[in-house]
Amino acid sequence: MRNITTLFLTLLFSFSMFADVSQSEKDALVKLYQSTNGDQWKVKWDLASPISTWHGVTLQDDKVISIALDNNNLIGEIPEEILNLVSLQKLDLHKNQISGIIPSSIGKLKEMKVLNLSFNRLSGTIPSSICEMSNLKDLELYMNAISGELPTQIGALNQLETLSLFNNEIVGQIPTSLYEIKTLKTLLLNSNKLSGGLSSEVVNMTSLENLSLFDNKMIGQIPFELEKLDKLKEMNISYNMFNGLTSRNLAVLDTLNMTMINDKGVAVLLEVSTGKNTAIASED
Image (cartoon, rainbow, N blue to C red; front, side, top):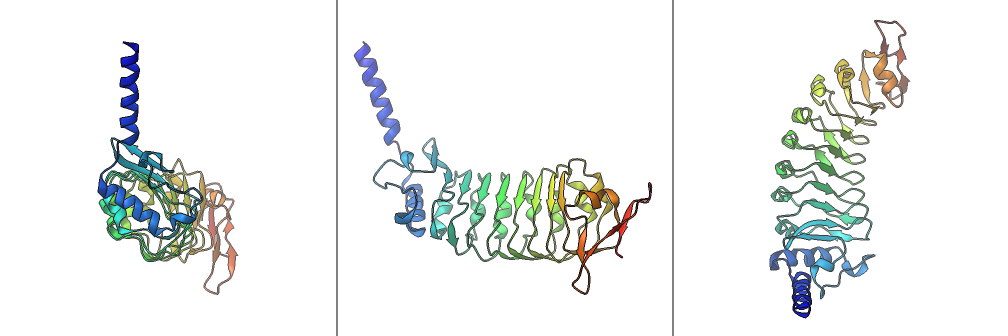
């Protein structure tokens, strides 16, 4: 009886080892390997082995749910075939040498929760279809060469907690819909080319803990409503062209104490009033 049980467990283990994903998903993974110079990866895939043994690939019920290949010397482009991984919940390609654009139909990956393509060489715009990823919680595209404007419907990502897009070439104004994301904790848009103002609607972002708009071209009044964000712990909105009045509390909260660039291109430290009820900062 013991031998029969052992044989059964052995067969069960063998089956689980060789159980595999669909051909379309396997083809998508192989295409990713080929498109990013897999032979030069730090940790390579043995394409003859079961996919369950491939570095960075996580399966669940014979579906690919996670690809984590950060800092693995991927060189090349993200293939369109990756859209066939319809159960993918996490794609982490951080700190590689991936170029080209983000696939325009990436929004087809409806189960995606974490999309991290940061610290690469991506160009082009952020596809509007990304707003269809209704389960997305973490979107990190920082340290690339992404241009264009933020998608107008980005507020549809109503479960988003982290939006990190710093050090790109993003232009235009912050879409109104972005202020509707009440789950957002970290918003890092610094070192881009954003213009326009910061809306008083920012008060709706009640979960916000970290806000960085540093080094952009934003203008206008700094909304006093920022003070109402009780969870806000870190903020850097300096090195913009904001003007007018701001509260002393916000000036203190800002990492560089509200150092702005005036119309002559000169850095100006805003002067802060010490009045108890009129604690404001105004341009000298």
